[in-house]
Image (cartoon, rainbow over all chains, first blue to last red; front, top):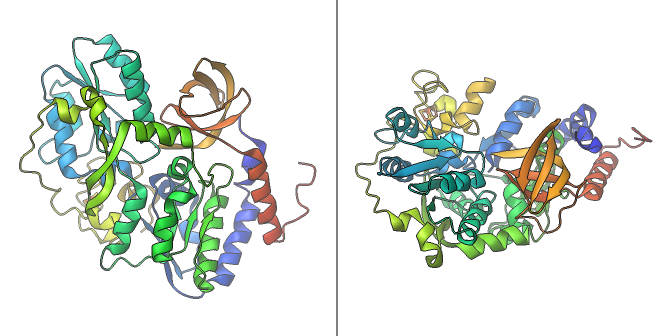
Length: 363
Length: 78
Ligand code: SF4
């Protein structure tokens, strides 16, 4: 069952007209970046890249949760999985991400207890059923996922499920935009801002960034019409040299965001500096579990030591996440690296840029 | 990670809602949503409803878009 008007968001006539209008308006060569893995996939799947005029280059930014997770964090997850009496619960995409020496999938094959769950509440159930073990959820993702983890920690406190823990490797989008703009050589003329991160943080969260840099920025949804509309707005802004921060996803995103979810996230987490793949350490771009929830914080409960962390050799994932390279520019792409045998996380996750290129043959 | 398509709430029991995803019933938590009701369309992320879809805004966006693209008059009576 779907909403009737949703079909109109996929209306090919609207899309065709939008493409036509973009073509008529676009004069200057511009580079637009989407900063959300779900947008990356939606753009490839709908074939938008192939119908846009040559003046427009679409880049995929650091929007795939698995991809931006620092190699040190991946290694820490693996180390945790090796800890006695620990059950790891995780979203599926993390399983095959290669750490420096192993992967979660490899660890599971070696007999560690690692379970893929659909939601944090499933992980909570695992904890309830296994009181003699410590059940650790691997917390990755952005502002959309962090509130679901906060909700699970609060529920664990309330229901006295003391053996439920989280290791928080969450990342925040606005600081990443700052870091991207500050990265030398990364020239971006406009941002397609994430839909569901914005549902939580609201349009207002981007205001400081926008006011500082005056780069055209549009929040949008995931239907072809949404994405094309955002591109049209960005092209208009660039051509008229009139940058704005706009919301093309009014049916879901408000100025203030989802206050309930946001407050829950603030109750459980505080911001900290965090390391990102490809972007390095970005100030105040990560979330740490607050002191009063320390019993549920795996980073405090366990002494996790990782040594010798190294990024996958030859993998250009970091440069791809910042728009400096595209997958075909990586020598390993399609030679040694493919979705069945991935070298780096950008090929593992279905939201990764390399996987999207591979799958939709966009080279 | 994001399920982009909104789903309809068919039942609410305490803080859990049953949603319909292409005919398949799924349970999602309502803990992150202030005022969900049966019949609402919601955006779901990893087992949680995170937002109600504003139907009026959805229609308004389409209307403005059609005007801007000179596509008025189509789909009257839809
Ligand atoms: S193709 Fe593979 S090795 Fe190359 S950047 Fe992508 S994930 Fe890394």
